[in-house]
Length: 209
Image (cartoon, rainbow, N blue to C red; front, side, top):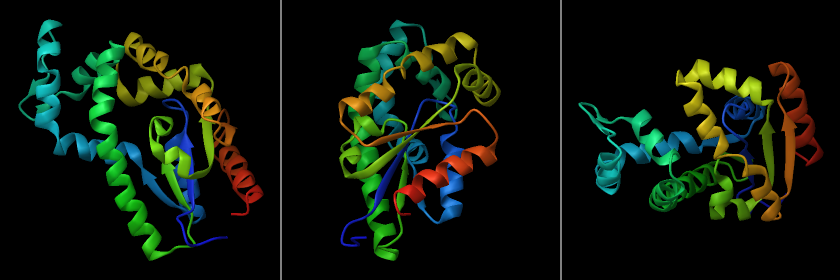
């Protein structure tokens, strides 16, 4: 394989489909894994004041209190931005370019350490960034809606209506990859972790990894 450029592989899919489990499987296999959600959380903390000022007036109009003693209430913020397409876009327009820049910094560092090692981008909104064009292919993890709802309820402890609202914003994820003509492999995660591992390794081995 050509080691003059980083070998990037995308990992995406809707909420609670098993992306993090897939990432840990591939990390164990030898990939360098970048968690875009973790990068996003760091960026959110770093730019918390700017984000609060961007959405303060909209939150006040809706009677949502964004501030706590520890900073922005992330559940309240999620409720605000996921309730309005325009607000979600406003948030993404601000935060995604910063996240992308931070991810590129990590890619360069990982590539400098071991140029031959594949780099996995675990990024739910990969299709909204220019990173997708640099990926050799995309592993799209999917799972039955009922399993995803159970996982989300257990993990996030939010009312089902809030979870459904978030899920509804992700309905077009897969079609976006098709629209962008990305080489996308769907991996169904409806069984055990062992079955997911088998499917993932089967797919990456087909690609020569």
